[in-house]
Length: 117
Image 1 (cartoon, rainbow, N blue to C red):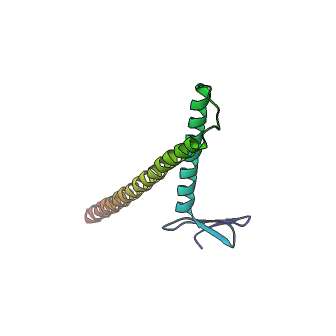
Image 2 (tube, rainbow, N blue to C red; image 1 turned 45 degrees about the vertical axis):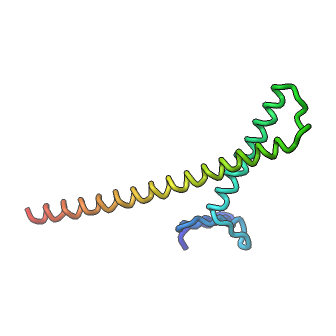
Image 3 (cartoon, rainbow, N blue to C red; image 1 turned 180 degrees about the vertical axis):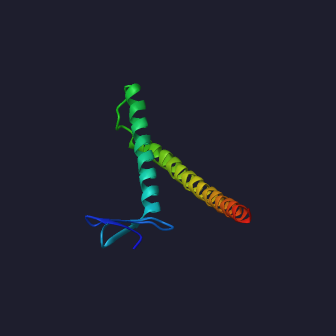
């Protein structure tokens, strides 16, 4: 098995990470990433809206739909940023693979040159 087991906590490396807190619950890492990103940005949106109402000295919960709208807008931005991060990580992995291939080819050429001398 590729990974580690510590106190029934398993993290397996693969194309998608799987986090398992017990043997019956398996949540793909990418879904957890999306959920935390969206919920974190949504909570920040509610905080910003509450702060804005506090600065205006207006009742904080008089219009809960404005809090919902802020949560939706900021949550959507969080979803977008999660996609950006995933695309950037994929690009970095691709570049890393290319660099490793170039390094292996350079080491092979250097070994051939040393053997020829």
